[in-house]
Length: 271
Image 1 (spheres, one colour):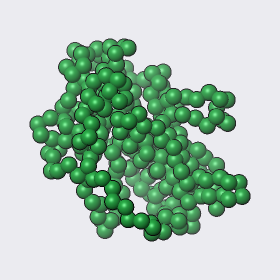
Image 2 (cartoon, rainbow, N blue to C red):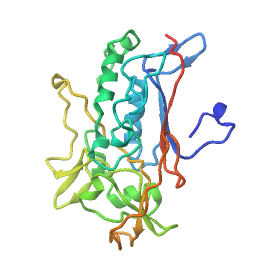
Image 3 (tube, rainbow, N blue to C red):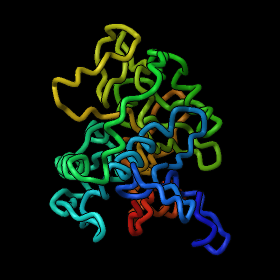
């Protein structure tokens, strides 16, 4: 995915989403330009859920963890939160932190939502449309999720999948993970994945969010670490406990293995 005007016509398959930082309410009628959108890629296995959360974070004024604020937006930025900690506004997701916002992201949301550029978000929706409440992991098995992503099956089906779902890569013979299993996926012993953890199943619906708690809720996510593990037979786990080295990932850029990253588009806001 790319913007052809800035890529020389060559699109990089490693980018999974685009969004304008702080663009949630920005529409420039004179230039016929709308910044209040994000573009997200999903292969059909719910792999785009965390990408969507990440890009919405950009629209609401959050930059990548470890980055300064945009000059046109101001605010606290995220310098004091480490990229390597792996929260939603990072690109490294190997623990349950990947399902939560960092404290820097929350501060930036407060700054943006209390500013003049966020007034459109206070509008009440015209329709109160009912949405399905079934968790996505109830709709696709672990094998089905891997088949959507890589055309193969899941390497193992225990509590590890909640942080990272490893799928067998037939071309290399390795188990490869780019994301956690979808929320609600079976993680063994009558438990399901919820916010990166394997917990007992108390029903298959999405709970209502009580806004009176004034918390920022994390959204089910997709890991993009590109970790590879030793050769394994699909469904049997690993033959060796020691993983291969993890390739480094530049922010918003693919690694040598072609893992996906996130990109935010910066530019002056037009209100």
